[in-house]
Image (cartoon, rainbow, N blue to C red; front, side, top):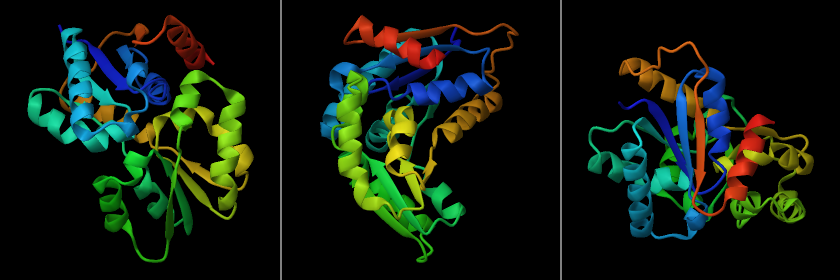
Length: 248
């Protein structure tokens, strides 16, 4: 029986989406697969990423996942269309930078912080062109090695890199967290840009997952709290840290 919500990311970043899912779908069972061995995805080719993500999808389907959440902007922009074509009977929900939210709220100077791959992707260009009303400024900034450092938990290096990347953008009125990893360090980002509003697409992803489950009659009818399983292909220490992050 397909009864779990499957989630995957290139490491711990998808925890930010899992947290939002737990807040609105607490009775569901979850399997979160952290692909830390292949982190960062942003340095892989499209062909490499498709092979990597296909293998993960196969694993999640074999473990009875009824819907798969691609909790990674890079994997979504690179692979989601091809994954939908390959696995035609599988429901996928992807992740894209919250550019629409910036335009909807009429922010005038928005910074998009994301991986190089996401910044240079066709999808981001399409989003900007779709919602651009020519009165708002959008600046794209590379997060460089930030996702890797978040997985490693090196707080000093994270803070040093944030200062290097974000210091030139003190006038930005909003910042789009264009990688799910970055949602885990909101407090650190806010210290560098205290007057900037952080825009996070994770809530929207969680709502879309619920919509898909409702529309396809796949909601778990149980009234008890669901089970959460986290797997990491690099180390048990990362699994332990993931549960700590999830519970704090």
